[in-house]
Image (cartoon, rainbow, N blue to C red; front, side, top):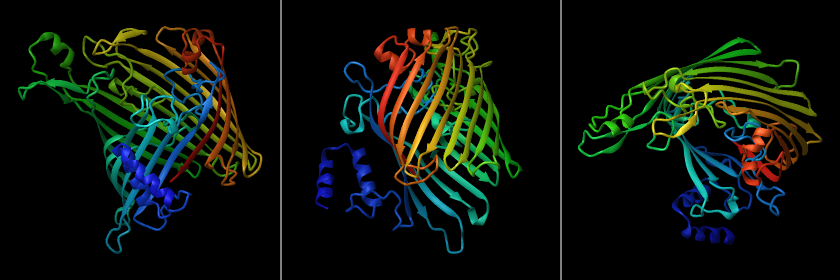
Length: 487
């Protein structure tokens, strides 16, 4: 206990956000006097705690041993392999409420705290006050009531990471990532949600969320909210096959500025705009392989301001490209997304995890290259990216696994030449839980990655690694990493 008290007293110099994390830990963990951290509080049925995290060290043999850089192409995020991701932490406490006696309703309030570094600095050598130091986010804070009065009915309100399955080895939540703030109702196999997206970020290249409001007599940035209505329907075809149908409607209201200065009004007074999304996902469970084997194929098409999804993200409200500056709208913009995700457990010795991701997007400007946004910034108005990859996991025994990954990514922005990279990763891992399962965690990994770039990717420095080392045909990454989750 002496060491614990010393640590707690040292928080007097910390920022308030870090204190909140420590207080949560002390409050939720009944074993605070023990070195081992128990993330699931089994002594209190009203509180539970989940977590996701990754942490480690990495380097490249450049400039005497520099911090390792991601080898993927720019604007692709972790699509192309995620073994080079930097430190990240999520802590998700949930508070459970008891309904009246005899009522089976499950009620809880969930929050999620996220911590990450805004630079390549590791957690241990960074604070919230460091240059490029730790950043804190709160992507979830919502209340949900499930199984209301014993019926297959759920209602939720708040900010929520509201999304379906992801391609884990590419860290890509595809098809129906509706993470935002709003409310939703789920009844049996039907889901309805309304999302309200707004921001005062004046540097954003998407349709502006703000305008100058002088009705009060004082110019100010007033929110111009995007409303997203979402409907999903699950359909069970048979024991091994099912479908999910997706429909979305996006709308941004008139900015309705009354400014008389033409130059300002032209920039800030935008008409209403809208977009539509349609999608279908087919899910097939393989019956001739071990349990947990499946193939998911998803196709999604978005129009207008609902053509979003780039940089590894798939949210349709992240509008892509440039507007038509004459009509001041995204009429004619579109995006087509195709994702296939495959997991096959061949035996107790071997699992294959493969994926394919293709996205073709175009903005509303009358060009295939660059065009100006509402605020004069030039962005690409068209892009086509394609990635295919696979992870082979060989279970040497219960505690030692061997990961082998192969990825190929290519991206064409506007009329620029095609950039591509081919990457191979090998990672021996220790699994202390002793499970022969591709989803077993934690992982303790030694990661080695080698990438080969084509001419244009090399010449344009089209990856974080190349932007650091300059024009190189080959890229290298080495790391000792840990990843865990518990929910």
